[in-house]
Image 1 (cartoon, rainbow, N blue to C red):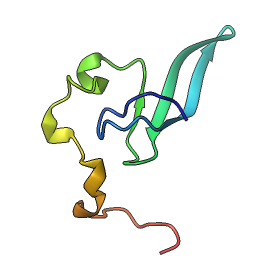
Image 2 (cartoon, rainbow, N blue to C red; image 1 turned 90 degrees about the horizontal axis):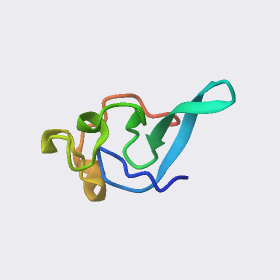
Image 3 (cartoon, helix red, strand yellow; image 1 turned 180 degrees about the vertical axis):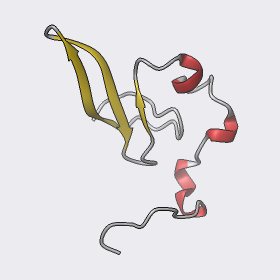
Length: 77
């Protein structure tokens, strides 16, 4: 787990899903928040992934996730 803040729920519990390599150098990383399942690439612009720069319309209240509808089928349910 990293200390990267999730742009959607502001929790610091993202995991690295994938890294793009070029000549033995990581050029981008895809993170996924284990709280709200949002994923993003670290090379996206700050207006997209900056915690304070994103519109509040796209934020998720991580303390109250049950208030959001479940759109995708959950595994094992």
